[in-house]
Length: 447
Image 1 (cartoon, rainbow, N blue to C red):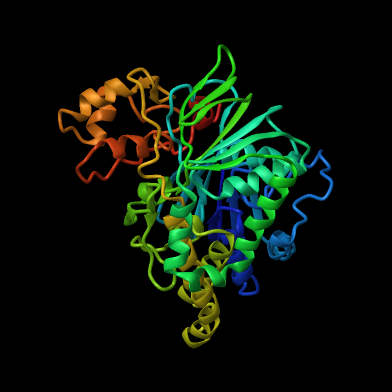
Image 2: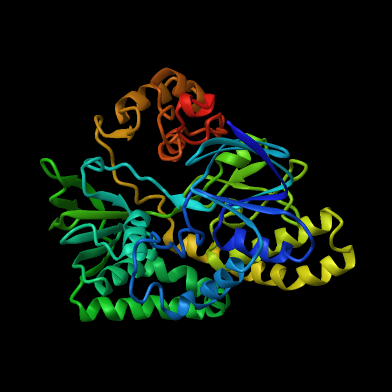
């Protein structure tokens, strides 16, 4: 194992929240490390191409301007960038990382978890066929390298982000076979009519959605509402989608039913979490300075609830101010003044996030599963096996021990929400365990 590294602050996540926190902490004489699994900072929202690639007009739209400005400010900071590193274990004041040179231990007086979110994995008959992706995975390819994963891409689910991804595919030169919303258009409009003020405050997002729709219409892309997926078919690659309104030929599918916080590290640390939005998952609880229930550990961004890049940046800024205050680098009255603006911004964007949750609510629209449909694809655990265990009244952890559901490479990140939907009683889910990410024994041993 490499020699241990020591910092005043370790930030996990180089996306909008982590960048904003680092910017707030800069200038206080603190040593700062930023850890991220990607080689380059930006998070998923500002996913950078590899250094060897040159992508023309990379994320040049107006909605990315603020992110580019923050990124430029972050790049100028004197922070230690630990890109390409995963966190294997976390405890107050300590992180165990794994990177290109093996395992490395990091100590820090304060730790900020800003780990982002992930696509809600939704099992459907045929979802393990090659060519079937999460919508976020499709977007990452298109954003960072302008690679379209198929000749005819179908997007399906309940989340409006589908429109943006479809537009990006079209602008990237791809063909979109269709965009399917399982809910009706009236069901999507109803939440906005109930809270028009929240919708109005994020008018730029609504306009971006309208612009995406216009682009799709010009490209002849069918956008359909009230049409759900029932199965994906193909011999050795997905070739068609079976929907409630017929069959659609395609060779790539992006599933988009929502997003869940990356909660593994807060749970490993023993921080208090609560159920996140209707898509499922867990979000980390925090106080007015983004402190978690574990001393010395802060949380920000989508780890505290999926609310978008602007909310993540506001939460990250608030966490940076809170950490500087905690470490005595910022006087309490100065911290209060500095926190006022990001608190207002965070509250405004979280109100819109609640509205978006209602619009994209996937409950009631999940595809029906066949007995042999794999729910845990890491360990090949079919739906029927889980149904049998759920019928006994077993907990998620007991079902994990009995079936190996959640014991694979993803450590339950994909299958846990599906299993918890099957368990009618409240359940705390899988116990977060070391290692949080796959690692070889040789790397841990330093061979």
